[in-house]
Length: 613
Image 1 (cartoon, rainbow, N blue to C red):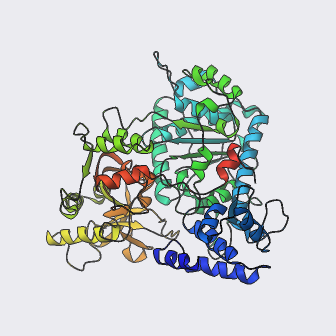
Image 2 (image 1 turned 45 degrees about the horizontal axis):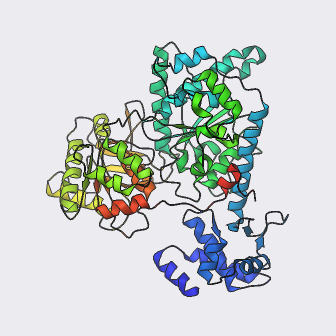
Image 3 (image 1 turned 90 degrees about the horizontal axis):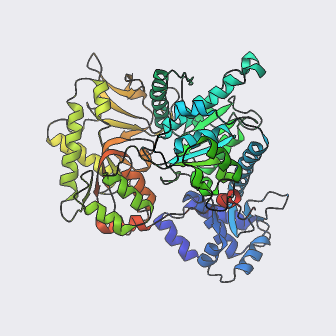
């Protein structure tokens, strides 16, 4: 067992903090055993690797103890492991399904599930008004020959009727359009009820939030475009002036535990909308939900098939769970039949209601049509169909998707030719605004950060190519056209983790870091004032969540590799609006498609009627 830990320390699946925690548990235990030490290492390491907990089956397999009942008995007698019904708080919690948690994560999971269930219960007992047909027709007009439901319209009805609404869908399914019109429906409800309100409550206080500054800015920019469209239709929609990161909205306090806004000091909003919810980890989602006012609404927006959060949990995936329209309650289906054309066929299965009534999946892609190789490929990847995925990549009828096998064309020559050409196009633009826009046309995405197929090496290779072509000087840190990615939040400069910018000369010829302001203009920050950042001709797939590029060059590692997975491949290819080149072997694609990563958690069971503790 200890030998296994030594190996895990070498490959990075366990770190010294995990073993130090296990040593502490051993020192404090009433009865110290090797099994407790192993379980403590694994529970701590699970969180570092994205899981919320570890199963007793995993602990037994790793420790070499075949009898899980005996293992459970040893842990319960150690004095370090709490059972859910016990009033005391111990460092570890073992639930009734054999999942072992660090105490903080068990409490966060339990409290989040209870809060979401409370939202659902309140919605069931409160009389929320159904939007009038006339308004729905104005915002989501029915088509004469329509047979399938307009899921955007369904989302508006669902959100209007309850405190919690979760809208999921792939790129191009109209999530932002849906939200803008959904907000128009909710604001109309406020206007209609003015007679019962005081002047202070006649407008809805809305918070637009996202995990990163980049995603928040993009949300606000997209919603403003939709607001202008609605204005042309004679509908006025009031939006907040700003969108914020989750940390900023909650009141991050450097050097102090917790946020300024919490259950005792809730957020001052009637409606909180969280975009890119797939990126939100368990403890952050718990903090957001805990800080909501008692009558506030919550809308979660995201793509459940994207990569999960960097930190522990797969919250959006667990919430969406086994959702399908056929599981809507009898009451909701009756409402939808009266308001949304094409929903008559939703009563083919036994309804479950509950959390299912809060979830809507947008199913029609307006970006990838029937001729799109990217669209077909994305669906095959999500279905886990490796044969179809590889066949689509090899099909010349899909010019928007190409597989480049390193055996047929060396990775560096073709990749660098494409990337360097795109970089030169940026350098040769006339002004910084055009340069910032042009820089979003092409991007290299990598699964890895380090190594010859990783971000750090690819960025160096691209810079070397630009030096050889005479566009930048050797050993030049700051140069015209250098793309930069901010990697740390810095309220002083208004820059946040995930923001991307460009080095460009100002009117006096001084090189500055420029960032788009979301309204077609750019603002400058002196390079010396920049928070932690890095060059980003190439970026990791994780860092591009919430971003879009016209053309994507996706670089995959060769198998076997732990990062090759279905969600990584899907997320990478769907960052592209028009075309994708996948640099990797067919075997790498197959392994990625066939590898579905499932994070250990009890949240799905809690919300969907599994084990409650």
